[in-house]
Length: 257
Image 1 (tube, rainbow, N blue to C red):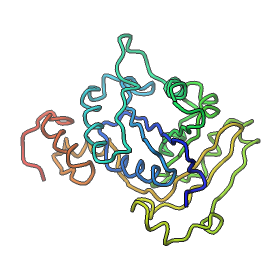
Image 2 (image 1 turned 90 degrees about the horizontal axis):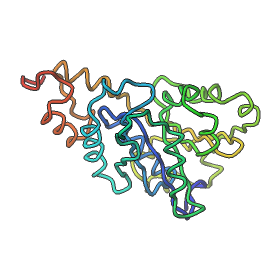
Image 3 (image 1 turned 180 degrees about the horizontal axis):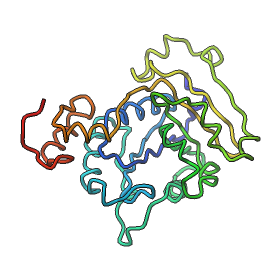
Image 4 (image 1 turned 135 degrees about the vertical axis):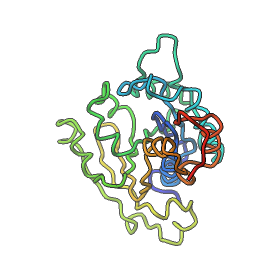
């Protein structure tokens, strides 16, 4: 039996970020979302020129994309994407533009597009370019993170959208799907409750809870500079790439603790 939001058409999610570096938390969130929403593809979209970060402080795009590609190789649903690759004019790249491009290229009129995002990033949505239009363009899957209350997403909505929105909570009993069927899915789904949702004028916000992996790219970079081990924080292939290329540390040599 399919989840109520899984359709016979293709479900695709965009998962953007700097991925500096991509880590195990990103992958677990993507796997949980893919299992829960029946995503045929999750496009990992590293941004060459994120609007709210200084590009010259980021690891060069080729390295970040290479790490994303290596991490995606372990799951056929995951696709490394060049949608926000470097351009000649080096202008900032905006999610609203990327979503518009993907929607125009979808093969089927009923194919469904989702925007996968962590709740911490979603809380900053009012600072994004054309965020109101983005909310009207695509369904969101908001993945909770440790220390955040997913109910805060109501405060992100523009006042008129919040007045019109309808919140719903889908409990397992309502779906008629028992625990035995859940256990047949990916292990990541075991930790996730059925997502709550907020219906907007044209789109829906889904919150996916229970994916608690307290990992941040910043902490990984700091661990490498301190020559601490990062095993388990990133996929083994990504760890090997980081060490081989000497990323995030001025001196790659030395004994790792």
